[in-house]
Image 1 (cartoon, one colour):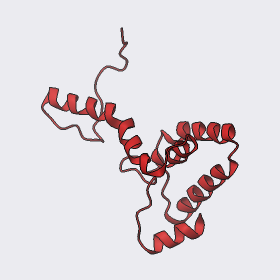
Image 2 (cartoon, one colour):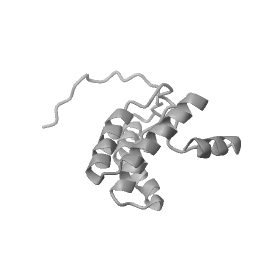
Image 3 (cartoon, rainbow, N blue to C red):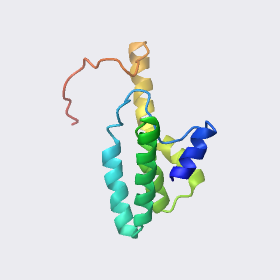
Image 4 (cartoon, rainbow, N blue to C red):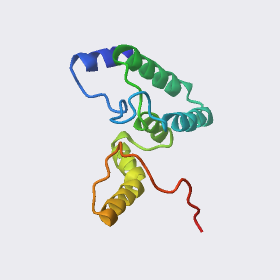
Length: 129
């Protein structure tokens, strides 16, 4: 993992699954997805997958100070579930469609763009009936 990362960084290739344009100190969704990944690693008895995950996560943090985003633990989880690598991007997109759609509907309703760092001023809690 470290040799691959060093080679990729030297070639200035983008390393997918790391960094977040808003959450610079770590994506808050990662711990939950990493726990799901650990469950899959245990279920399929594939400890080497978690070792690779941890090695790359640690090396990226040491070399660039960049933390993983949600896609990083999702990829190995998808792999363990039997999806091939070419399917990962459509799965990442499918998981976001509900959020993208809700965002578009909110922007359309208020006729304004909602920026990622905007402060939410709506109701603190809403119950679904």
